[in-house]
Length: 442
Ligand code: UDX
Image 1: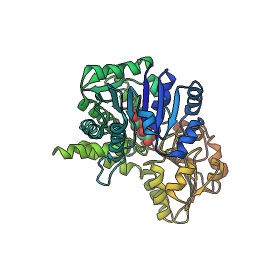
Image 2 (image 1 turned 90 degrees about the vertical axis):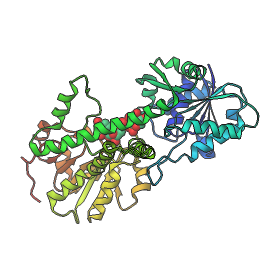
Image 3 (image 1 turned 60 degrees about the horizontal axis):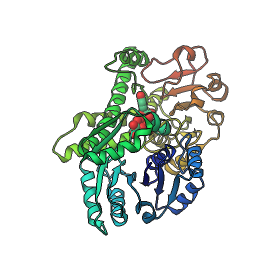
C-alpha cells in the first residue's frame, strides 16, 4: 500500500482521497482552507455526496486518512501525489490553470522522495501535463526524480463513490512504463479495467468523453423538440434507439439540458482547445447552442400557454443541476428563475438539499419553500426542474389540491402520460404530447 497525497479537496479530490484510503492506502489530503480542513479532520464533508461522511469517518478512525494545510507534511514523504484542484472557466471559455500551476509549484518545493509519481485528476487541456512537469522542475529545491501521469476522473456527482468502486475504466496516460505501473498498482484493488496510453491521449479521452455525452443529450433534446411537433413520444423514440447495441440506452433522457460542473465547462474548453490549433469544432458549438436554448424550454412553453407571466405565481420544483447533489453550478434552475422574475412572475422554489447554495446564486427575490406542498400552495403553474425521487414520487393529486390552477410544466418527464391522464391536471412535458383533457380555465 502506498503513501499518497491529494492536493485539493473539492469533490473530485476528496472522493478520490477517501476511496483510496478505503482500499488500504495511507492518504493525506491537503487544502489551504483551514476551516475546511478542521471540519474534515472530524469526518465532516464540505460537500453533499451520499455515503461520503461515513467513509471519511471510518478511514480517519482506521488511521489511514489525514487532512492538513501543510504542503510540506503532505508531500515530503509521498510516493504518489494527485493533483485534484479546480480548473474553472475563463471568460473566453478556456480552462483557468492558476490552481494547477500553484499546486505544481508547491509540489516542486516540497517533494523529497525519488521516483514520486504526480498524477493529474483535474481536467486540463491537452499538453498541460507537460507544463506541470516544467513547473515542478522549476521549483525543485534538490534533485528529485519524478514522473507525471494523466489519470482523468469520470465520477458523476451524487454517485461518485459508487463510480470509484464500479467505474467502467481507469485511464492512465504516462510517458514511461514505470510511472504507469505505479498508478496501476494503486488502483488494482478497485478491480476496474485499466487502459494505458500516452499522456496527450489520456487528456483528450476526458474531454472527448464529456463532449460526446453532452452531444447525446443535445441530440435527444432536438429529437424531443421535433417529436412534440410531429406527434411522436421521445421516451419511446429514445427507448427504441437504445435497443440498438451500437447506440445503447444511456444519456438519451430528453429534458431541459445538461448542467453541472463538467459538461458546460468542458464542452466550451474543448471548442477553445480546437480553436487554438485552428480547428473550428462546429458540431460541439451546435451542442452548446442547443443546450442553452433547451434550458429555457419550460419558460417558453409557459409564456405561450399564459400569454404573459406577469403576476403569476410559479412553483419551481428542484433547483440542483441534477438529483442527489446540492450542486447548483450551471443548473437550469438559475436561468429559469431569472427569466421568470424578469417576466414579472413570483417564484416559490423547493429543493431537498440545494437551497442554501441556490440562495447564494439566485438571490432572495425567490421565496425558498421548505416543502413541495408549501411551494405549490396557490401557484398558478408549477415547473419541475430536477427529478428528485421525492418529486417523482409526488402523488399527482397534490397539484390539484394545493395549486390555484394545476398546470404543470415537467422538464424531466417525471410522470407517465397514462398516469397523468387519470388526474385533474394540465400537463406539458418534453418531447411528448401535452395532456389537456382536464383543461383548467385561467
Ligand atoms: C459528468 C460525467 O457523467 C462524469 O463522467 C464526469 O466526470 C463529470 O461530468 P455529472 O456532471 O456529475 O458527471 O453528471 P451527469 O449525471 O453526467 O449529468 C450531467 C447533466 O446531464 C445533468 O444536468 C443531467 O440532468 C443531464 N442529463 C444526463 C440529461 O439531461 N440527460 C441524460 O440522459 C443524462
